[in-house]
Image 1: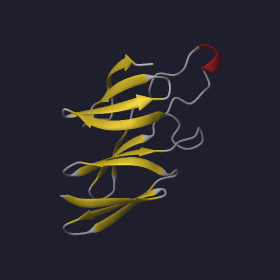
Image 2: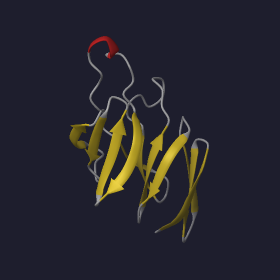
Image 3: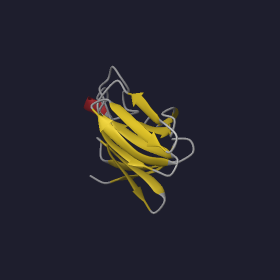
Image 4: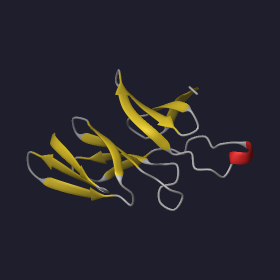
Length: 121
């Protein structure tokens, strides 16, 4: 069980009853949410690192359980623009993520697949 976690730039330090584990990302950690036996992490992103897939679920040992599925791309003139996630929350046992192009997604807890989306902008 996770007791605490701390972010330091591009690292998450996970404290459990038995150990301390560190996960290092390629970009800074923007937000994390502690669950009972895992952590959801939203990182900053750019095209060269995680692209649009900047949400992760980590085990209490600091291992990546999944990386979020690719969200829908911009269309038209902005088609080559990054559509990274900018927000992350838990609402009534659902993982919610918000993308740069104005969509609110529900993410599957076990797999990181995008289950549904609603345009909110």
